[in-house]
Amino acid sequence: MLLNPTELEIDPTNPFANDAFDRQPVIDSFVGIITSLKGPFVIAVDSPWGTGKTTFLKMLKASLEIKGHPCLYFNAWETDFAEDPLVAFVGELDTLIKELLPEDSAQETMKSVKKMAGTIAKRAVPAAIRIATMGTIDLAPEVERVIAEATGSLGMDAVENYLNDKKIMDEFHIKLNLALSTAEEKNKKLPVVIFVDELDRCRPLYAIELLERIKHLFNVENAVFVVAMDKKQLSISLGAVYGQGFNSTEYLRRFFDLELRLTQVPSDKFCDSLIKRMELKEFFTTRGAQVGQRDAEDLKASFQDLSRLLNLTLRGQEKCMVLLALAMLATQNTEYFYPVQTVIMAALRIGAEEIYNRVSRENGSVVEIIDHLEKMRVERGGIDELNWSGLVGYILSMRDSHDQLAIQLLDERKRLWNTARDNNQYDDGLELIISITSDRHNRGNTLKTVIKRIDIAAQFQN
Image 1 (tube, helix red, strand yellow):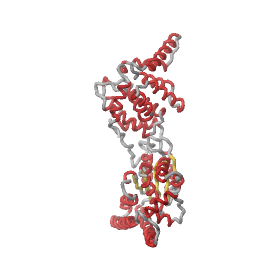
Image 2 (cartoon, helix red, strand yellow):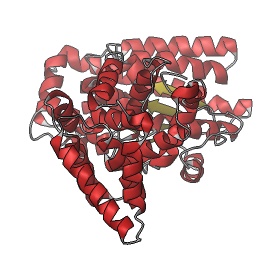
Image 3 (spheres, one colour):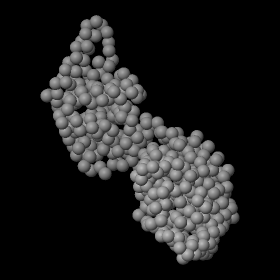
Image 4 (tube, helix red, strand yellow):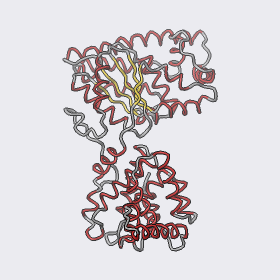
C-alpha cells in the first residue's frame, strides 16, 4: 500500500491507455484545433484546483507529440521562487531549443536568447509593454501605481532605455521564431506547443508577470501556449493584491485568445483510480482474520457515496484517501480496522470539518452526522435508499453508551423492523441497519476509537 497515489502513467505511444477520466474525446478535439493554428496563440485551460488539469495537459502533450509537434512542459509553481519568470522560462526553453537545433546552432542561439532575456530588465519590461501596446492594456490605477513604483518616472534616460529594450525585444522575437521554425527541418510539425501548468498556485505577482511575458515577449509566429489554471481562484488572488474595484476577471481575459473549461471528472471513476494507484487492496489481503469478507467493497462503495454527499473535489478525495491510508498503516495487525466507519470520519474531516469537530471535540451525537448527510442527500441526491441505510447503520454502530439520541434512533429503527416482520413485510434498509449495528465486528467500536485513529493519522498528513 502507498501513502500517496502514484501519478497516472501516460504512455507516450498510447496516451489514453490509463484514461480513467474519459478525457480522450475532448483532447482529440483540442488536438485538431491546436494543429490548425499557426500562432502566436494563447489558450487557457480553466478548471478548479484538484480536478485533473495536469493529467489533461500531459495526455494532450503526448497526443500532440505523436502527431509530430514539438512540445515543452513548464511547471510555473516549481519556478516561482525565481525573481523574474522570464529567467526561469528561458532556462526551461533551453531544453526545447536543443531538441530542435544541431548542437552548435542550439548553443549559439540559446546564448543569444539568454543574453537578450537578461538584458530585458525586470524593472523596464512592464513600462516597455505599456508603451509598445500604445495603451491598449487598460491597467487599473492600482496596477499602474505598482508599475510606476517599480520603474520610476519616464525621464529621458528611461525613454532611451525603453528604445534599446524595444530593439532587443524585436531581436528576441526574431531569434526565437527562427529557432522554433527549424522544427520543420527535423521533420517536426508546427506549431511548437508550450504547456504552462500550476499557474494558480503561484504568487499572484509572479503569475501575472509570467502571463505578460508569454503574451508580449513570446508572441512569435510558430508558438502556441496552453496555460492551465483555476481562473476564479487566480482572479480572487489578483483582486486581493490590487485592491477593491480591480476587475481581475476582465484583466485575465485579455491574455487569452481561447478558453477551454474542463468538465468535472466522474467521482466514481476517480475513486477507482485512487484505490488502484494507492494499492489499498493490499492492506485487506494481508490482514487475515482481522478483516471482514466485504470490507474492501464496502469501503469503496461508502467512499463513493460520501464523495457525492459531501461534494468532495478530486483533490479532496485524494486527501481523504491519503488520510485513510495513514489510518490503515497506524492500525496494529491485532486490531480490527473498521473500514467504513473510518472512511466516514475521514471524509467528514476533509469535507465537513465543523460536524467532525462537533462530534469529536464537543461530545456531539452521531445523529448529527446522520442529519447533516441526510440534508446533503436531499440537496444533491446520488445515493440510493439501500446505500443510505448502510451508511446510517455504520454511523449508529459508532454510538457511545452516553449517546442517548443515537440509542433512541436505533431503538426506533428496531421497533419499525419488528413491526414490519410481524406484518410479514420485509424492509431491506431496516434489515441492513439492524445487521450492521449487531455485527460482532462492530462490538467495542466507538466514535472515540475511530476519531483517535483519524487524529493520529492526520498529524502525519501535510
